[in-house]
Image (cartoon, rainbow, N blue to C red; front, top):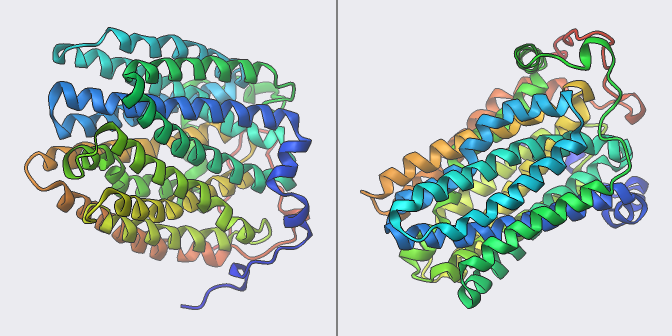
Length: 446
């Protein structure tokens, strides 16, 4: 298979001058947003480690543990369609602060759950926290291109993906140790405090979270906004292909929900084991974006599509081995390798959408993007969790890895015409044209 020349990394002056650390040092607004995400993500994984052990101790059900991961994703997906429209209609900064504040109080509610009959309350609280994330995340993703320059956008996306992965690794690892040492209540407190600190940092951001909106673009109705979003994606096949990336990825990524089940039932490592596997997952997500950074070139998006296809193969191939290792540390190594691919595909697809999609519709596109992966992961995890009550969990995970590889092949074949249409253009002319009226752009050349 002949790869385009753009897949050969060329660390030119852009790469040297626009390094991630330079962006953090020179852009205080992005630095505050980055800090808010670090703190919030770390608290999230403190909470998840504590809740996974709590659900298993109270119910002894693998299906309910995987359902916990589904609870992390389904409410997010359902609310994301509204959250994206809110991000394009209202003050993004105010939405983020409000979502963080409410989540901070909700996280304290887990202290009142002590019996199996109260587990439904745990799911309700966790689902509510997840739903509010669907208000926070699209607003944050849509705001980044307004808080950083176009030249810094690639570096910002690498940092964003690395932030999530770093805090998954750190939060899960420390969370497992803290929960074992101080009890699960420490996880609840850690998550609550993280939301309040995140809100405080967002308050300090002085830059504009969105471009000025005039006329009809300022307050589109929810139905109209949703129609415009679907129409935009349907007409621009680049965007449609990129949205399909995360949605398809979620079909096999239900395997992620089985990591606590493996830790608790296969490797018998308890909450500490859950922390270990999710820490390896986070390490892979951290390293993936930095490995792919030299290949990101604004003037040739074909590189993005090639990279996404290869990243799928890495994820599926690695997860095929995770459940069959003799010890949990070797399983963690394959988790890390898998999420090198996962981190790369997330970074590349997010960067391309931020580059292509105009500000007036960007929040809705990102909400739709995150909703697709949330729904497919939830469906995958829920169905596979039910099967795992009757079939060996290792066999189920192997099947999910196979689903990922099949989708990788199908997506690569289906997007051949899109890749051929992405001819290199000068970076100066790559700025997408934003129509003055809410008309939909024509199809890109095929």
